[in-house]
Length: 212
Image 1: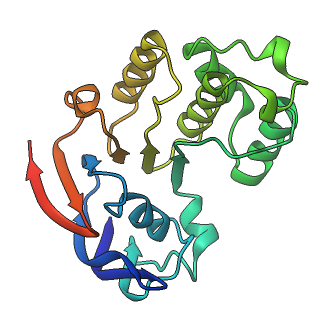
Image 2 (image 1 turned 90 degrees about the vertical axis):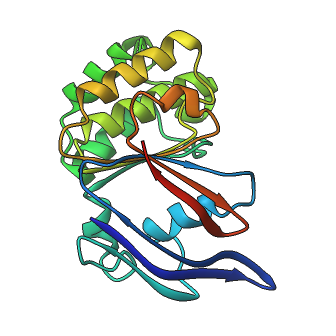
């Protein structure tokens, strides 16, 4: 589903990703681990088409995420570690998501409720002014409502309390059929029951890739 072939990314004199080759399959649930600076975020951004590779290729179902970025992003749900500084109200943001991605607003509200985020009294509040936990819950709700075939979560529970983390992982289990899920995480114990593969990176390289 995702094929990285001899992929490298250099920023100035820093080699952030160094000749990485990985194939990620439909049905995989993967924990991507490593210290800060290991290359995890760079790898994710190359998959999403945010960066051009310095060398090597990324293909998502045979497509180039740079040349066909809009088509690729239609298939991907991504929740970043740090919520983006969106100034739209919750209502405006949901309307934008629904029109641009064909998501049913009722499904966003459903998953927000499942995450214990009460949208109704906050509809006209700026997303930017919400607490970190509320932002993360809404982004998770949108990612699940989108029903993407590829789910990428970068430390998605960093701003969540323990109950919200439990809700998040419960919802993932209910929606994991026939999808590819990639979790960038420092909390392997949280995703251990979800993943079937663990990839560890260091200094821009894959140092272990284990089936579990």
